[in-house]
Image 1 (cartoon, helix red, strand yellow):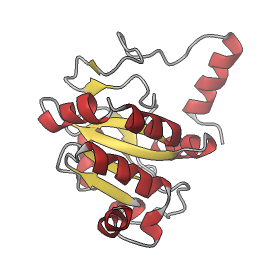
Image 2: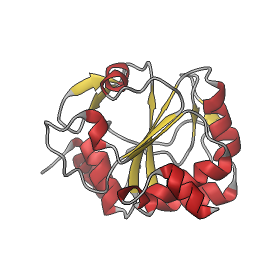
Image 3: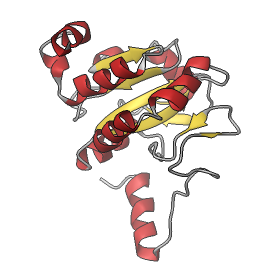
Image 4: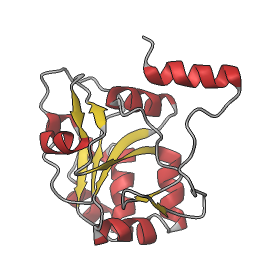
Length: 193
C-alpha cells in the first residue's frame, strides 16, 4: 500500500534531494530548543504523523517504536533531554534500538492513529490518557491489534513522568528485550540489581 511517507521518500530518492530537512540548528551535539518551546533531538523520528506507518518503518529498520509526549516549560522534559539523553550509553542504546516520535501534549498537529482516526496531538493525548510529561509510550514491533483494541491496550509499556538515568535506560532495555511479556518493570528492576 502506498502511503504519503513511502511516496515522498521514493520521490526524494529519485531526485537525490533530502525530502525531510532536519530541524533548523540541529546537530548531533545535542538538543535544540524549538520555537514550540520543546527540546528536539536531531535523531528523533521525522514523521508524517501516521502512527501505523511509523511503527512499520521502525520495525523494517529493526527498531522499536516509541512516542514521547512533552510540554513547553516542563522541567522534567528538559531534564530528560539535558541529562538522560546526554549520557552516551543511554543515547547509544536508544538510537540503536528505537525510533522516537515527539508529540506535544497540547499540540494541534494532526496525527493519524493506528485505527485510522485523525486527531490533533491534544486529542490523541486524551485518547491515550496521557496527562503527565514527559510520558513515553512503547508499542509492539507489529501493530497486530484490531481497530476495536482500546488505546492503552496497544502499548506494551509506558513511562509516565521523569525517571533518573539508570532506571530510564533500564526501561528501554526492558522494552527492547520484551521482558514485559513475562514480568513487570518493577520485577525486572529487582532482577537487574
